[in-house]
Image (cartoon, rainbow, N blue to C red; front, side, top):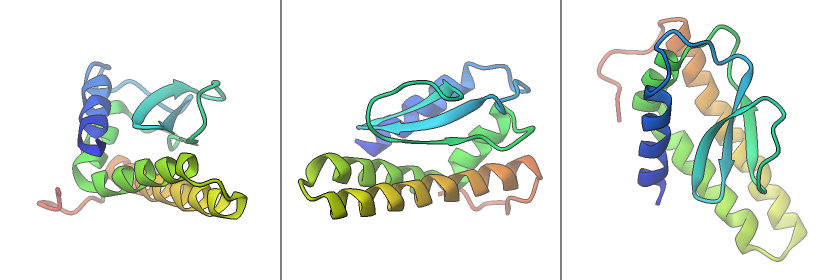
Amino acid sequence: MSFKAINALRTSVAKLHPLAPLSDFELAVERGVLTVVKENADFEIGIASNFPADCTSSDVLDAIDHGAHHLAQALQYVEQIFATPRRVAMREAFSAGFDAIEAFMDVVTAARDKNLPPNAAE
């Protein structure tokens, strides 16, 4: 499932202009879906994180090539939020998912700053 969601994100971001700024947008991780949404947009239960300042769609595409495992982890933790009836476990899954999406945003920042290592694509 995460492979399809990551490819769908890649496809939607690739449709944007390569220099389109994404600083007013967030990456939302919902149940089985990764979407770029306007900042503070309403979405189903999940997690969201702002894109770094001055990042472009091209930076996000580079980051997907280098940090897709963080996106897969975030999707997995969001699934756990839905799968557990215990509040403590839900909070733990939410926190871990947010950490995963923030780790992906670190990769986006590295892409923006042109600090990604060559041949590191997963």
